Length: 151
Image 1: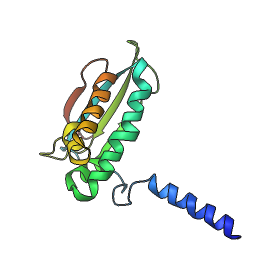
Image 2: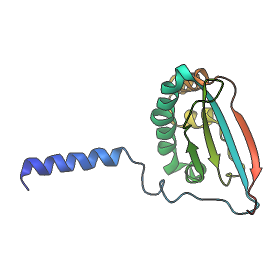
Image 3: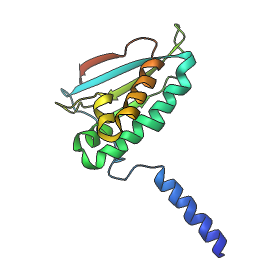
Image 4: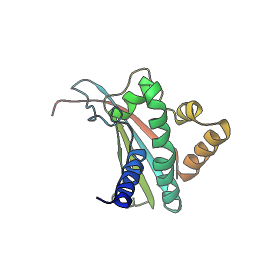
């Protein structure tokens, strides 16, 4: 391989590595057993703010979790146990329902975005992130605490 090609390959690998969280964070997701508590959070996103909400998820929330996880074992466990479901279609009320499933719940952990943002962002950026999140919602998020059942 020529030197120019090697440089391009190395640059591509470096970019790919910066776009992925560390292997310890992306371990196989944990799923709870029968009797474990599960948390389901539904965010009803305004149609005109869907792009903003997606940017919040992928450019603010996820990077904040990746940044916090190496030094915060609770955030690392939450990442392993959480899934995000993106809506396939718009709801009848013209909103988009994004669902977080945490299975099993990390007991005694806060699932508060402000708590996470306070750990990794300056106060102004944390406030801005929360404002972006709140303005994207058509109504308050719904949160359900459930128990895994044998099926």
